[in-house]
Picture 1 (cartoon, rainbow, N blue to C red):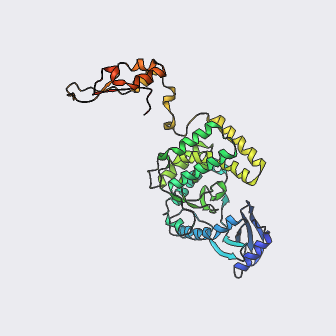
Picture 2 (cartoon, one colour):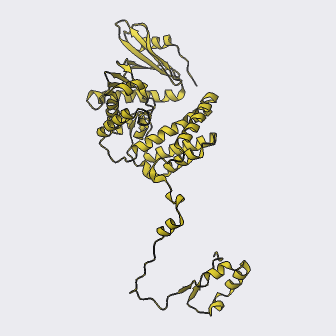
Length: 389
């Protein structure tokens, strides 16, 4: 189900939900991403508000949990746990089963852009501190809302399911598939402590002022999960200096230093986003998205070649020479002082090469009477390379 709602309808619901509110006009933001519509309004005193409503059943299910989360994050900001504000709801209206309306005050500042990140000397660091602070909150923040909670292995299995669905939809370039499958099979890559995660970050998730993050918004995909999800969008960007500043600030802001493969997972998640885009096109039957996703996957395949996600994923033995294999073979250690048991079984290998060269019939014949061929010793075990039992 998809709900259609006009800006004036949203404004009317805001006036009904907030006692005494007199709407004077509409303003920015005016957005509709297919799952959530947002409409700015101005009241008689010049205050700006934002009215949000889910447009799909899926978005509608989570809006109450999202409202609870925003209240918790607002409180965390008020006590100094977060260095940014969130759009805490001042009203929540549920007129019927299909129309949910959430209203919050307009967050002051400017919507962040990639150009801001590139040119500001302080913004990347502020971003790193802001996201680190979010990830430092206890998991109870998510648990109290009823939003999804995923373990480290849950996250890995979700990626595996995504890759399998993508491969079923289209033949993913073999080098990409091998790279991703090898990474997802490496359990050491997924040793991390789940944290509160925004889940859908991008430049437009933040409001800024004078090179500092002032607000974080759009928590519709929030959950407990892999912190790398919130890093993938920026650590894989082309702005190397900003990435370095961001990473340093983020790592400094985190108390948990045990996650050794955080950035590698962020890279992996960034690449798998192309598979997610492909699947979205397939599910919505949008050929333009499908074509775009296939093109980007092909381009990525050309850029990466056979490079693995981690250097440790290279099977160096594939290029080994005969000398390498012989060097790898462990030498047999013989203890000259060790006494041998005269009654122990003896394995006779002297005629092994002759047995290999014999025909199957001759081998069968020789295996019928192995003791006779060797003189009938009771304490002798012969090796027959053709025997399988």
